[in-house]
Image (tube, rainbow, N blue to C red):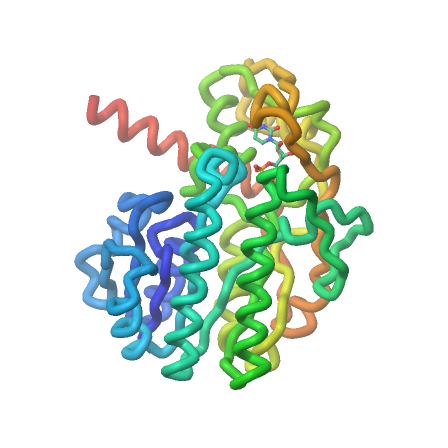
Length: 328
Ligand code: UDP
């Protein structure tokens, strides 16, 4: 098949590209390299089944051409990471909503299957875990900018489902819960690459708040497998589905694990949220996915543990360090 991956040079998108190329599909990646990295797809260049276009999904004319000629669309292009959202608030909303609008408009015009990722952020301050897809969504007030990300993604979800309701566009919405693994950069605030990198460098690990907040981390390989199944399963059309892992760990526990598993001498340093993100930042204490629906619809069952994640991320950083010092 011909498959278009927007944001295919990003963290999740590039793993999708690897998997789908491996299955023999023809892949086109469109990425403006704003948060994606050329290095994530460099190894695919030269493969006759791979094409990289460096441009934005907001380029209407180009997107129309690309979508018209493709069989499937994975719309992975998005603003990512809490830090980026706090630092570039306007761009975050524009990229998320306009990008999805363009993609859905042309998928609807040419009747193409499309997968639209959303995020566990949409559950916001909900406290009744595990979060189920039909639960109420509870975000904060508009002066707390963090919630703009959740709201923009919620609007994407509404738009996707609206296309399904009005014209039966084969669209699937997936809510990704803290998806992590190799190639994720710590630059936009994500906790796992930050902790593992600091641990490998024996530098202090910075825990926000008291570290008792908990998260569940899903290995990107598990998640990507789920997404490729979902787009091939007509029962998923018009549905919202959680993907991730449901094993919880506190952020303090994660820091300790990263130190232990890498044999690091790092110390744990605690910083208040105000110090990191400015006054009035709100975090959520717990965030656990219900994976029942993913299991029922596509037999989703994560197989990789947090230990696998930490090992894979640590190995990637070790490789990068080796390459850096060889090039120095
Ligand atoms: N966090 C932390 N230190 C860091 C980065 C993140 O303590 O260097 C915390 C963050 O405040 C949150 C959790 O780790 O409570 C997960 O953060 P991340 O940005 O990875 O994802 P989120 O779940 O907030 O979307």
